[in-house]
Amino acid sequence: MTVPIEKSLDDIRNDLFGRIATAQADGHLPQFLNLNKGVVRGLIEIWAWGLYQLYQFMVVVFGQLFPTLATGTWLDLHCKQVGVTRQKATRAFGMATFFREGNEGNVSIPMGTVVRTKPDGAGEMRRFLTTASVVLPDGKTSIAAEVQAQEYGRDSNVTAGMIAEIVTPVSGIDGVANTSDWLITEAVDNETDEALRERYTLAWKNINGSTKYAYESWARSVAGVVSAKIMDMHPRGQGTVDVVIKGSAGMPTDALISEVKQVVAENRPVNDDALVRSPTPVSVIIDVELVLVSGTAEVITATVASRINAMFTDPGVLANVAPIEIGEDLTMDRITHVIMAVAGIKKINFVSPVEDIQVPDNGLAVLESQNISFVWADEA
Image 1 (cartoon, rainbow, N blue to C red):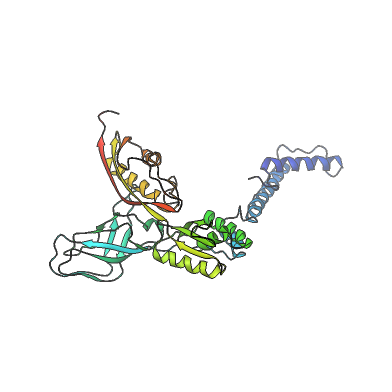
Image 2: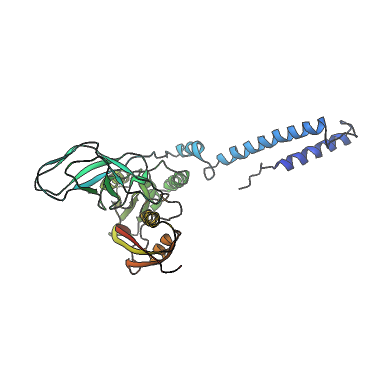
């Protein structure tokens, strides 16, 4: 964006030469003054550079005066005026299931036992620690234990089946897994300028009263809510409003829904019948066979898995994969686009799904499982 005070170095230099010419014409400077080289030209260049730096600084400051352009701490100051503060990163908490092949004897799983995901397309793994000791009792083959992410940020909001490796050996335990509803509390990143700016705008729209923007503003004020769809056309009868929220991991946890309920209850008019709820889940199973022509199969399949996961999580997990929003259909073309962006793939053989998946306005596509296999093409 060009602002009124913006000037290039050439503009400033030309202004200086013009001013010198005027001073010469007025008799304030000698007529025969060498402006091409020497001490005078050097002083002009130094002065022009100093003015240019001042203009560059003013351009930055000018932009920070407006919330639509402000960034970082400057944006925080604008938001503070309307009671909006930047949300801080949190860690994920959930339930991991430990299992064994037999069912004899009690097996203790100590607090601090470390489990992790398999490497993704970038070779990254997410680590989790058990928060308390649990005992897998005699006669049982599995038990769920609460785990917390070792690191902060939404990358730990992994999808079903991604937690699959035990780092801390536990005698008598053969494996670990996580289900699609494993999360207790979803993790969030430090809020981006873009997301914070959206909430700033909603805070101003909130002033107009209990409109759909007000409900969205209240819902988005809770850390972990990445989007909210306000069903304000009397979804359950006259005077009803449904607030359908999406969490940073897709389907919101019960804890997140409870937080939003509290905020909405504190702000809504007494005559509004407001219901805060999760979207209607639409189960998705992705099972594909990749036909490869080049590259390393393990890297390609891991990258594809990461890109598929990114479709069902929060914006920003992968910058070039747009997440599925509330009420958005999942088409075969979209899945193909996400997968074929990975180099080395000739074609995709779909086992599941075999057609576009329709999602209602208040629904959300949820990844239940994925299976990525591969074969090598006979020819490129």
